[in-house]
Image (cartoon, rainbow, N blue to C red; front, side, top):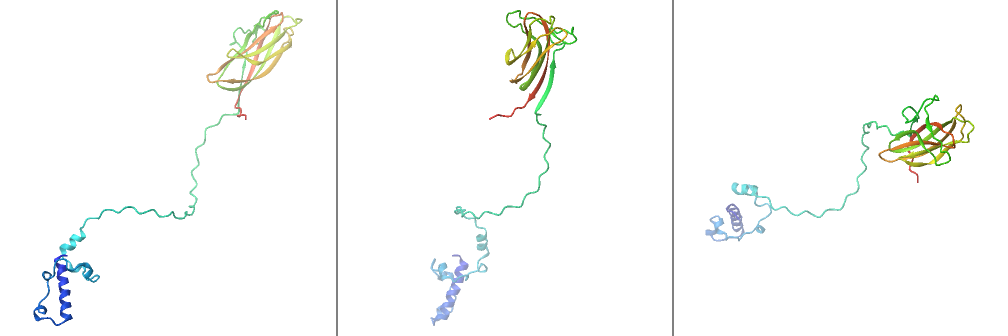
Length: 248
């Protein structure tokens, strides 16, 4: 306890003695000071609440109290129970319109190829570009490419129409058309009826579904004549690229 506190306590004690009884004149005739109180004889429990205010403390002591250091932070308390869910907020403002997307793939894309002057061996002597065909003469088919084109990766429907011409209208011959993809036979051979002479042509047509892997493929339309008479043939192909759905 500091000296100012001792003095205040001394004053309180002296007053109590003066009122409380008739003591000797030596005691009542003077004030009791802090020196008259034994050290630690008066504790905080002996003081009435708010009996010692800041105005009764020395200025230096008050400054020391005010400038004291913060104590060690206490530990966090236990988390309380979760509160009730809040109400839904108001809808936000409508966003800006997005950018226009890129065009998607069309369902089909079609183009055509035909026997022309770029076909090896083709001749225009009959008014159309035709490739000479050597008859098999009773042996195996002698196949000759009458149309060739490349396809990139994808799925296609290839519709082929071929025409055959012979020099002898009385021979019993007919034309055969087969498709190859990278030298592999595509099932679906088509053929003509009996071939007429040069004034008319025998015609045949058929469609094929072709699936081309990454890297692309080369498609060959080949023709042969089954019989004894040589002739000529040409072809046209309509190629349609499709985007087939995934079938279950």
